[in-house]
Image (cartoon, rainbow, N blue to C red):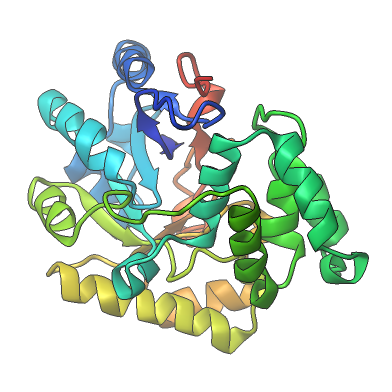
Length: 309
């Protein structure tokens, strides 16, 4: 079974000339390719794997997953899945529903979509010091992050600094200063799925899961901080939609992004399964060995999955 990870699936927006996204037409072409070459996992067969570890009817088939609760998932993805009689697993970070604000990770995406990497990196270089980016895992994060992405010049380093190296207590302020100096204003309205969207998508047979509260690198957090991120996210999702099956997706993904504490918490909180990012198929033994970090491919590893722009 091949689980596939998607983020932005949309059409071009002239306000963001450098924004990275999967064009909706190519998304449809990729679904056509998957249908012809592999076919798709049926909901009943996925439930059998999660309950009993049975994968026989799903060998080499495709499972679709979507991260970050993006509005384009309702506008573009949901109708297409419905038309094809497919389901997806949608992972929701809950901070936007608590504060009516954008997550820092998405503020970074928007800045990188509106301005060149050179513009942002030049400003960022003045705002940070070496002391601010010293991290005991800096070498590990440098080695394992953003290596499958085709980014514009300096974008990879900008993302590493703001998403991995810098202390979270400083990050929000730095992002706001960058936006002010670039004369850019963030707007959170219509960026994320609404609560009504989430309920409708679930009612139509899609699975809704947690992507944490703030979409943070969990391996940078204490046990107590991780527990709050996971427990509070499920609590809010429970208030949005009923009969929630507990499933979780590690923010950013990769084995560098979580640790033993994360897995301990997921098991203690009775989370049935979680997704990582790892380029391999899901096997039956993963039900016993890796159910809290099931592998997923990035959509860009298959035909028609490369980002536009």
